[in-house]
Length: 135
Image (cartoon, rainbow, N blue to C red):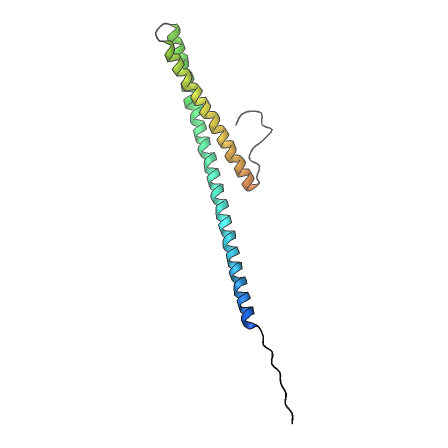
């Protein structure tokens, strides 16, 4: 009687290491994707907050500060022409009006930049480029 046999070594350990490494890479990729979503949400909320803040401040400038500055300038002009005030009063009132108008323009620009960033992030059109009047 003759018996024979042969043995094959299966690389189980190497496969187990490869499987563990693949699982770790999968989990790391999932965490990276979750982090990217959180970063995008954070940016989205920051831009939306910038737009809302600028819009609130624009209302204040348009409805309160600029009209008040214009009225103060008119009053200073009348007082100057009546001889009751110096030219410095007129110049100061004009300076306040110019400063507040500059701030209004800066707020409009900041709002548009935030809207453009939101457009880029979401892919939704938020700015009408064919609009003829200032926003």
